[in-house]
Structure formats: structure tokens, C-alpha cells
Length: 466
Image (cartoon, rainbow, N blue to C red):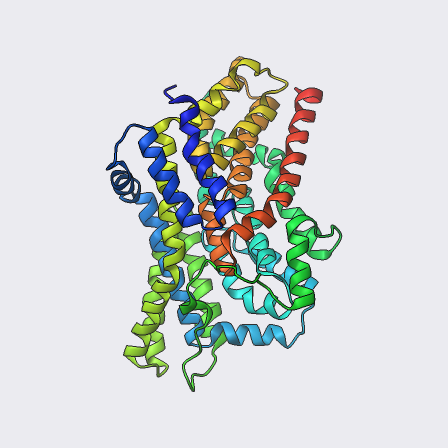
């Protein structure tokens, strides 16, 4: 395993520490990239080369376009008065703080097919509702974040499931897609972190578990001062989207301009997954953007106004795209420097069958936190964790294999969930129009509680049943 040793973790550590100190994630990531390229011996021109290599990828293009299309759709929803109309219908029910949080929780669980769309959709739709109920933007971002990837990784009909099953295929006795699917299904009850994370949101929303830590302070500010976002905070979304008003005289057709487009996106995404084994989420958004552009003109909005709205949607997505670009650059740099391999090498000497699931969960968590990538963590950890587990079972399927598979999946989501470098964390801040670092700071204690419980569960499983 090639690695530059401790030097390989410097960019990630620098980015995370500076983000908390300066509260400016863009500057922190840029500094981390520059310092990292110098540490890697790439010279003064290393940073532009890094950007070129990391941003000129299919992965970044996909998330950038998806984020842009969602920004356009949010702008369309607002210009047609659809979100305002939907929010008004909800406002008429006078939802309490508890009711608003529970609605966001349920909505997040329902939109499980895409961890990228879910936090943006939940945040955009629920923002005015939770604002009226005096729920802080930090709490909305937490709810949106904790019902995106944690739900997606538990569902057997998502891209997450297909990806994880693909990584397991051909390892040990997992010889067919049916074997891989069976492993995924058996691992669901042992994927402790996502389960705890989703349930914990419900407990927090209902008040069964009281807010604590920085989130308690944020909620107190929202309730007592009516400030859903702190003074001096920088919402991770352009004003083009947060301050857009409906076109004068437009009739609020909630079903036509909001519910129907969302149903079309869900239908295309799920339909293409069933038909082609790949959810065409980005293509679904592009199709709906085209259809809504035509529909808005038919409804009487001038072509120039529609184009201005589209442009505002793109502008509103720029803050998140900038942050994602630099996060991808740090991830690429970590990959080049062997950050993941270094973290794994630190744990090799004390791996035993009883400790294996817990250690795998811990390593995957640290790796995902340092790189901001759960899928990257899966790709590196799964080919190491599963063969290691099979070596203890003579290539036979057992609880150790199932728990190890689940530990990789859960650990990757946990670390990614905590990391300010994660794309889903960024998108949650964007959807809720929350300050990004405020979202990370308030969510972190809740994620650590669930992560600690998951780690304890893997220790118990290992000691008692393996």
C-alpha cells in the first residue's frame, strides 16, 4: 500500500481545522489544497493541475450538473409560486415546532432514491415552514442530512446498494449478483449507524430526546429571538434563490408546478433503476427542467422572464458548486498521497475476528471523515475488509462477513456525515440555507452519539456472537 505517511493526512486535517477556526470553508479548502500540493512535491503549479485533474471527472460533472439543475428547479418552483402555495397550505394547518420537524423527517425518508436530491429538496421545500415554526436552519440542515445518505444506504433499490453489492461481488464465496444482493439484505439489520441516525432524528423531532450541545443554543436563539440563523452567518445558497418572488399574477398551481415535477423525477429515477440497473437521476432533472420551461411560458410567463429565472437558479447554486469543487480537489489530493492507506496501516497489527467489525467501522469512519467521501471509502475499504473477514472463516459466509460488510457501509456514512468536506453535508447546508460550519458544528454531537452507539454494537456483536 503506497502512502506518504503522516504527510498524507495534513491537507485533510488543515482543511477541517481551518474551517472551524475561520468559518470560511472555501478559503480553508483552498489553503489545504495549496499546502498539500507543496507537501506532495508538486511545486507552485501543483494547485491548478490538481483542480484540472479533480474537476475534469465524470463524478464531479455529475454532482455539479445535478446541483445546478436542482437550483434551476427551485427557482422555477418559486417563480411559479408553487413552493409558496405548498407552504401556504401547510401554514394553514399551523404546524407546531414538533410538527414541522416531523414533516421534514418524513419527507426526507420518503425521498430516499438520491442522497444528493434529498437534502436539497427537503431543505428548499421545508425552509419557509420551519422558519415560521421558529426551527433553526441548523436543525433543518441536520434533519435533511440525516435522512439522505443514511436512508439511501439502507434501501436495496438505490445506487448505493448497487455500488456496495458490486464491490462485494467476486470476493470469497460471493460469486453471483444474487449472492451480493443476499449479503446486502442480511447486512441491513447490522448497518447500525444509519439506523440509529434516522431514528435519532425522530427522537429529537418529537422531543423524546432533548436538544443538546450547539444545537440547543441554535434552537434557543430561534425560539427566543426569532432568528433562524445566527447574526453574521453566511447561508450556503445565493440570494437569487432565497429572495425570489413569484411572477406577478401567476396562478399558484401546486400540483402542476410542484407535485407533478417531483413525481416525474421520482418515476424516471426509479423506473430507469429497475429497467437499466442505474437510476438516471440527473437526466430526470434535465427532462423536468425542459418541460417546466415550456410549461411556464404556456402559463403566461414571458420567455425572457423564464430565462432570467433559469439564470438566477444557476447563480444560486454557485456557492455550493464552488465548495464542492474544492472538496473534490482535497479528496483527489488525499487519494494521490495515500491518506486512506496510511489510516488502514495504523490498524493492521491489532485486527482479530472478535474486534474486526468494530475496527473496520472505526477505520472507515476516520477515512470518510478525512476524505469527505463515503463512496471513496467503500471503494478502498471493502476490497480489504471482506477478504480479511473471509480469511477468518475459510471463505464461508458467516455473521463476521455480514457484520464486516455492514461496518464498511455504516462507517463510511458516519465519517462522511461528520465531515465538512462531504458533498451531502454541503448540499444539506445549501438546501436549508444554513451556514455550512454552523451545520457541521451542531450536527456533529448528534452524529457522534449515533456513531458511538454503533461502535459499541459492533463490539458487542464481535465479543458475544463471533
